[in-house]
Image (cartoon, rainbow, N blue to C red; front, side):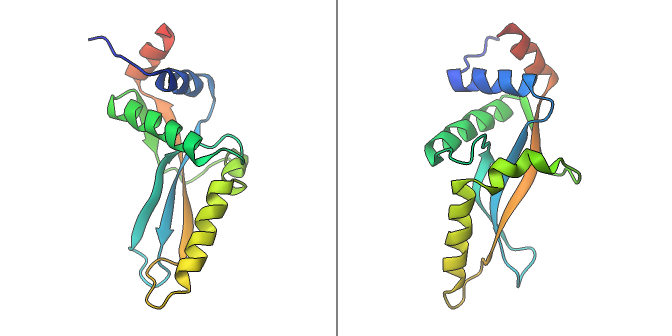
Length: 137
C-alpha cells in the first residue's frame, strides 16, 4: 500500500526522524474548582519559534494528527520527566500568551468553569512504520 503524504507530512516525518527529542504540547483549559474538568483548546501543537502564527501551528497540527492516524507517529503526553528547554518556545509563544489572556478574561465572568491555562507537555516519535517511510523520503 502506497501512502500519499502531503509536503507538510513529509517535512514533519523527516523532522521527527532527525531530532533527538520532538516536543509537542496540547493547550488545555482547567478548572481550579473541579480538577477533573478539562477542555482541549488546541491539540497537536508544535511551536518552533515564539512568533509562529496560529495558521502555521494549525498546519503543523493537521500534519501531526494525520501522521498519527496513519500509524506513522506516536504522541506521548504521559511523560513525567522532560528537558525544560524543550518547551521554552511554547511558554514564550504568542499562542500561549493568547490562551492565558483568554482564560484570565473568561475567569472574570460569573460562573466561569475554566480559570487555568495548562500546557500539557509531550513528545512525538516515529513508529517502526514511520521510521521505514521516513528512510524512503
